[in-house]
Image (tube, rainbow, N blue to C red; front, side, top):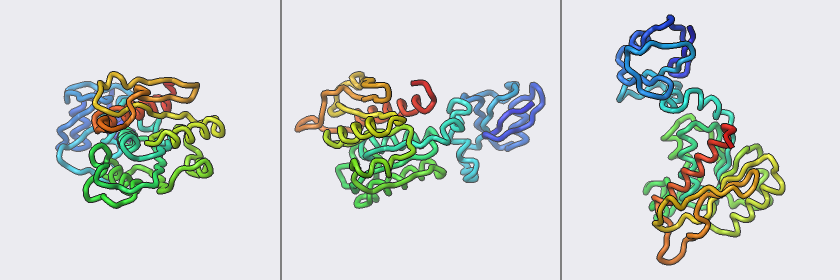
Length: 266
């Protein structure tokens, strides 16, 4: 019968146990994951099962990392996402968190657009580090994402997004994440995409500032292909800043929305 071991086809005997496969592939492996969940070595396998065999503490060859990163995901998920192309407009607090989450889940290509550079105040909520201060945000984030998943495909646009370059930057994307700070930039991006790109789904955010309950971060469906995450009210202002917990939570809700769109759940 055919099963998959570390995402590669593998011929196994009917009812063969995980331990037997482990001993054939890597007898030193001590982490066994079957169909996205840890399994005992005496578990009997069935046709179509997906088994990940991992040796803790050992860095595998680069070609095997992809399969092992996705070991705890829904079986076959990464194959479904590998051809996806997602744009992220703004890679600060929201965008950098969205990008990292989508990288870890296996989205095929991320298109990152941001004109800014990393500065010290960004470190409080964005996926950057002290040794990246002064770098273009797109390049710094590419470096971070590459450390999380060395096989991620990235397209970098270190420019300000305008109505004139939206098509050049985000052409071919099935989903675009709006992650700007300024209201006028948010409005501009959404209006152009809705008017000129009828096949693009937009995942935006509004109202993520402060330390209010994350329960207020709702998903608002504004149109057939337009979603907004947030409470729609808590904008950044004096005594109500942008902080990592709530911004990060909103970014991950956006990332999960993107995932659901790509999988046809929305």
